[in-house]
Image (cartoon, rainbow, N blue to C red):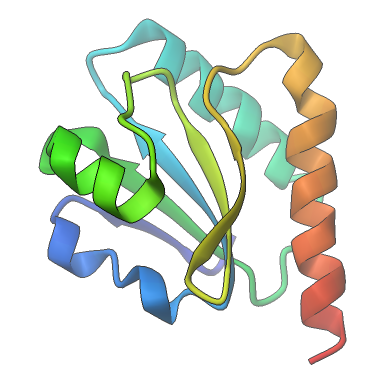
Length: 118
């Protein structure tokens, strides 16, 4: 994953600069977030991500107001995952389960398909 980056300060996120990407909201103190990170990274590693941005965003750099303003939702530390197209959230998983694996792959493949037309 060449385009993987970890963001620990909100000002480093630059959401508007993400043309196509996956943002994983990580909470180091949360068991569900740690498990979800493993699931998402395992699934993404099965794909050729090309120029897709993958961002791990530290939840502790966000306030509830930040998350509501930027993403329309207050995160709870469950490893929320967002798919971004042209700086906007186009899909999200708020709580990961085995059933969400298809969604993670499907939404990521949709972004990749869109990028292949660039």
